[in-house]
Image 1 (cartoon, rainbow, N blue to C red):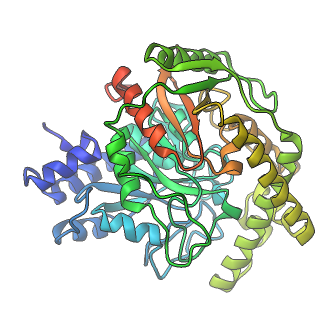
Image 2: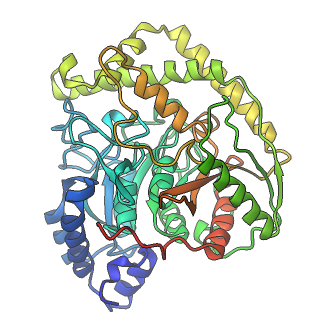
Length: 474
């Protein structure tokens, strides 16, 4: 093995454990790949090479992923002393003075942090093209988007810079980029991973933290290392029956899977995505699962208004918080048109508007939950289109909400999980005739990541995706 860094994270950690490779060797190899590939795809926006080298040369925690190179998304997860730009010109020089609880747990797992990955401004869009840092390009076709808001993380994993990278997900910000870049992406149950100490919940519980990975087992191993409540959390997910990594080797049994290629809002779906989900349904049936066509029903028009109210309120509150921390307030030139418009909209809503929106969100969550009484999983496309050309999801000063609406259409299947808090995953089972990845999206009941990991491992074995080769242009 000339480059052990091209193995998945668990395999790399095993080499370190057996003393067949040193952590510094993995780190230097990963730095070499980043330096070679990043100019072409712009996945890494902050380099932490000195920190990584120092960590790798010191005794590492005896964690399950000790010595494995890792990238942190430049959004929400704080690393003390390292700038956290949130994809924005306004906050690009903000430097937290503490680690987030998630980062503390990632460190205890033994991960070595090499840098931070690109994200759209404040994680608001389904593409990673921030004005402050420039676009992240899809490794499969550099004229295409890598998805958002964890687009930098997904592109880095797909290109082989690292085997595993942090991401977070509100409306599909892990799953959408995973689909665009042909990697595995799981959004955990609401409250599974901590958001502290800065947050009890993020965006009223709509956002979740985890990672993008090359392999299913890496995702499970990291979730084992990071999950569980933090001190003072307002709520947490039901504890798993056993480690998630053990679920990867478990028989999923005969699952009742409903599938649909129609969005709840009637959004048009590209033929490639329809073909891919039908192929995924057929594969599940071939594996012995009970597969039927079906979907839940709910009023998504009213839901969209409620979600915009909550997200806009959160955006306005975040800007106010940063203004206090940094001792300055942004002017309109320092923020992108959508961000400015959301802040203004958020400030125009009343407390009663916000409370009514939360009430509706909870009502829809209960409606969707009833669908899973008779179904173990709901299968859909991850996105409504293959990876779009760069520049497709874009706002202008006179149409600031244009990118918001286009993002919503692109992630029409994934956004329901931010409402319900259910775990969901994007599995890279298909590539279209243009060589672009198409993700298959599975949603499980609240608290049942175990079901997803069991099925994902079965799908990974039936149709391996890690043996695909990226274009030679990289």
